[in-house]
Amino acid sequence: MDSKTSGLITKKDIKEILIKHYNKTHGGALLDRELVVLSPDKNSGSDCYFFSLAGTPPKGYGIFIPEKRVLCLYDADGKRFKEYYLDKGISDL
Image (cartoon, rainbow, N blue to C red; front, side, top):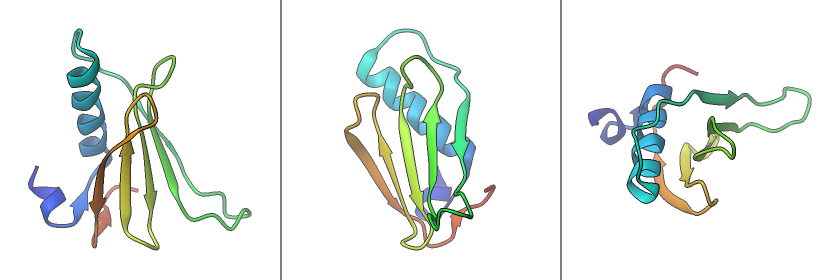
């Protein structure tokens, strides 16, 4: 996906990466899960976004910190498997 190399990514890209990683590590049929996005709470002083690939338990996670322009992706076991520096951020947040 060229968007990641240009420093810009979409929620759809994040969902696809998490799905592919889950299927690669756990096998089985191709998942089509919803990407759940939790936005920062303006009252908490926090400025990060949390993503999870729906399932019980969730099938993957992501954390985007706009201040540092970093997106970290985690597998279903909570181990980080990918980190992106996104100088242009996530286009559809």
